[in-house]
Image 1 (cartoon, rainbow, N blue to C red):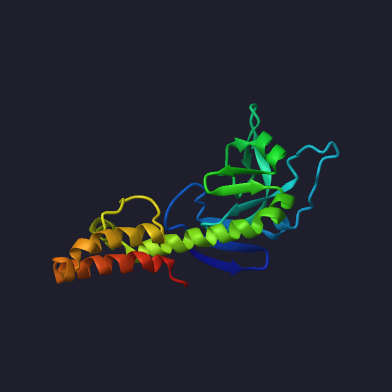
Image 2: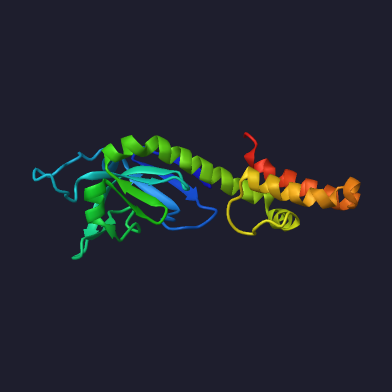
Length: 201
């Protein structure tokens, strides 16, 4: 993801490029300062109204902002107001009851729920971005390394799975066990490349 902020006297423009696709892919978000400073109104009945502000979070794109509900349809499906009008439909009932609802990679939540969940959400987003960038760095070699160690082509691997696959093959691939030096070097290289993802940044 690439993000660039440009400040001006009356508006801020955030440019976000999502490299891996997904829902909520607004690439340019224009936020007027008047929108951001709008008063937070909560209906006296305790229910939701269109002026109440919520939090929108998309960790993969680095979006954190306050939003209002835009359009509400008859079955209590809602869409956010511009500039996030592409987010929806989502369940208004779930948002009111749980304080949080998801639409694709976006989470819409109450301010209280954001305060409770933000640390865990930020950590999860950081790990997801790290795994994605690592996958981009490893590239096509990951499949080659997985194949070399006879590991599944899809899904996340653990250290123990990688090490166990290596040990199993090393028993016969090691030159002392009758294997070839070249084959043993290839499985060592595959193991090391796959274990790199677990190294500290």
